[in-house]
Structures are given as C-alpha cells and as structure tokens.
Length: 188
Image 1: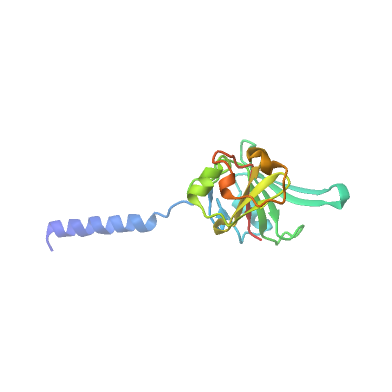
Image 2: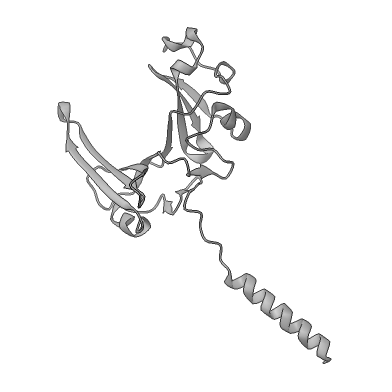
C-alpha cells in the first residue's frame, strides 16, 4: 500500500468516526407531534424532574370554587420565566403521562416556525387545518398532524362573527394577521 493510500484511508476512517460519534443534541424548544423540547408524550409525572433538571417545576394542587380541582404543573426557566403549563392525563396520579400542554414561551416552535408569536397566516401557509370550532370568545383551530390546537381571539375576527357561536367559521374569514392567543398540545 502506498503512503498516499494509507493517508487517504486514515482520513476516511477519522472522518467516518467523527460522523458516527457526533449525535445531534435535541432542540430543547422544538415542538413535534410526540415531543416538545425534551418532553415526550410517554414521560410520566414522576420523571419531570429529570426532563426539566435545569428548570423549576411548580405543582399547583388546589380546590377552587364549585369543587373544581387543579392538577397543573408550571415549568419555569432559570430566570423565572414561565415556559409551559402541563396537565396530566390522570389527575393526581404521579404515574400518569402529560395530557395537555399550554406553550407560553415564544422560543418553543415547530420545525416550520409556528409558535406563540405566530399569526393565522403562519398556520395556513405551513399546516393543514383539521377543523375550526366557534366558541364564545375564540376560534379554535385544530392541527391534527401535530396534536395541536391554537385559539384566535374573536376580537380579531370580522364583527359579524364576534358574538355568534352558531355560524361555522371558515379559514377565509380569519384575517392573516390575527395573532395566536393560546397555543396548546393535546396528547391524551
């Protein structure tokens, strides 16, 4: 074997080992169908401390009016900024997985850039809308491909839709610049 061939093989072996040893770090703010950052849909409540080891976890267990019970878990970053609001599938069960997530921090985004600071136009240009529901105060837009729904406040809709809960809202009736009010992931 010639000297040049040995060098070429050595370079090829080193390059190959570099590619194999370099695993891409998961994006801590990427939203996908089965994960949001490092949180996946199969993580149990008891495992949240390891998933959010660098963040603060606050569990809200309260008895409110009319015996309403809350089992929400708030996730804060090191600086005290609220990142996520989690709710387990089974209330008050530490072995339960997460059922609902409200995304609060604008750093969390889908691969196509959809996040809390996006507009309706960003949704329409990047995703298939499964359905739109008309509620008392919002249009709820479902994107089943990502197990996600977002709300658009009715104050951003045409006047004839703002106080009507019976009319079916069409995507063409929602202004492109209508901002997202709530950004939710549903895994239950």
